[in-house]
Amino acid sequence: MARVISVFLPMWPIDRRQRQAGVTSPSAEGPLIIAGRAGNRRVITAACPAALDLGLRVGMTVSRAQALVPDLRIEAGDAGTDAAALERLALWLLQRVAPIVSADPPDGIVIDSSGADHLHGGEAAMLEALAGKLALSGITARLALADSWGAAHALARHWADGVTVVPPGGCDAALAPLPLEALRLPAATAAGLRDLGFETIRDLMDQPRAPLTRRFGEALCRRLDQARGLASEPIAPLRPEGLIEIRRAFAEPIAAPETIARYIGKLVVQLCTELTATGLGARRLDLLCARIDNRTEVLRVGLAVPQRDPARLTRLLCDRIVSLDPGLGIEIMTLTATIAEPLMPRQAATSLLEEAVPDLSGLIDTLSNRLGARSVFRFATVASDVPERAIIRIPPLADTATSGMDAWPDHWPRPSRLLPRPEPIETMALLPDHPPRWILWRGVRRHVQCADGPERIFGEWWKRDAEAQAVRDYFRIEDEAGARYWIFRQGDGEDRATGSHRWFLHGVFG
Image (cartoon, rainbow, N blue to C red; front, side, top):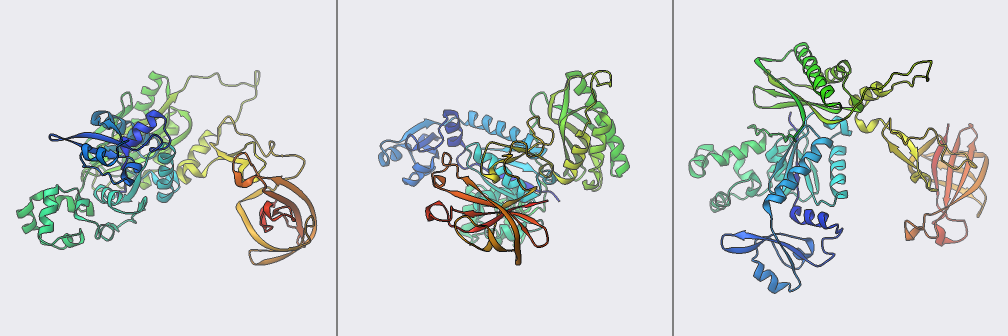
């Protein structure tokens, strides 16, 4: 089943100009609107949140807006530049999210995420990461994931939540309460339907098709079927200039796994030949399989380092064949190196010159494509006294990785397992410097046999004003079974301004 993401950018012209100007807040220099032409009138085509709060709206004449807000900043609309920037954003998402991405002018992007969610840890994690990337780039966005382009488009623009995920098969229920405009109908068609008493998409679902088609044309029923997933609506993927791509069309559709695997091998050999000629190696491969029913099945594999070894690339792609649904047959296969980086030949290490370093990239590629790229990582230490901030996740083969905890303070031992977040515990202890006599963690009481501490850690006052007086006192404790834990008290045990004096368990020693 196809899964489609619609990215709605309600403030796209405003966000684009603010990013170009380096302004972090749209209202930093006063309310801003974008002006365009509607016939002989000069009207607002986009407005920043500050302008909207003042009562301005899209479609209002500029003269009226100036009368309401005298200090209004006005910039001329440039539809061509906005569309080109939207396409560049779509290409940026093509490299990071899924193989099939296309601009949805004037204010959206559509992504076919079928077969790519496993690389991001699932659909919910994929949308959360996508929303985070756009927010960090200063782009206002609303996202929806559904079984069809029409449903995702409607939910992204007419649903209140910023991120909406519709479970497979749930399009009808999600679309039912939405207004008629969510079907991408002309304004005249929506007005005519309202004159007949139709208000929501639910009102149209069970209506006879012939009278509607005779009255409003075939576009109404086609849009309704596309939104419900009853009619196909293919997405034409963007392809940047210079992209290395190999395409194979078949005289007769293919469907058997062994046949698909054989042609994957042939495509990979041709692709590697092209990569070698350009001195590049693939970091990401996309296989698009166009079926005879106008649907496209996709496979995406990522690589830890640039590669152009046909055997390795073929194996990674063939491992994912089980997730392909060829339907009645595949008529076109396209293999694309979506991300390619320079790869120069290197002298192999010999025992006479240097000791060979084990190549773990093959193992990492296999694990990442089976478990998801976010499931395979390394830890690196960063400069911070606060334990949960002193470790970051980095790519498995990143050069900046450090082994173990060498960069951590060496005068106090650190636990081998640090909890994702400190968990509250119940204790009994003498203040201010004594360890607990017992702790109650996850419903189990543990009596403390021996303890070491306290180790005092101060807050990072230069990052947050709230941590100017924050204090943690850490203890290492051991219970009657020999298990050792890392616990801390929030506060110095005397002054309430330094913390709540509650106790937490933060780690477990191996």
